[in-house]
Length: 155
Image (cartoon, rainbow, N blue to C red):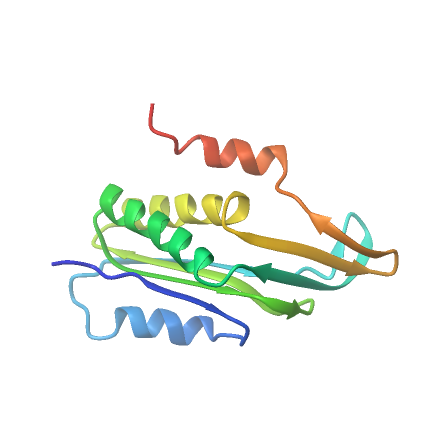
């Protein structure tokens, strides 16, 4: 069975439970569903955040995420995969990203979800700007994020 990944980059919010239900409805081949939802925090290092503004290059972002989704599908025996990433102005408490992986067994679902989130955090073609009382500032991936992504590199 060929698994097609669902990839959406959208400004609108999404319903996590609805996305999980849609992926697994009427599926008896799925024994594990793992989801990660990233939510905009209201503060960073004790400083209040008004919002995050995410920008992307349409077409390029979808193609890059699809390339990594295809790698996940090749590396792990997945029965389903959904990736949703928002752009635009996102207020604290709102959803930013969702990765849902489905497999017959939990290990594949967990590893694939972690692989995809590490990629999305460090290398996906999105630019994040934080709005706070101090003004605005661009956010870069941290060394910790880069190290997490590096562990997936094949020797």
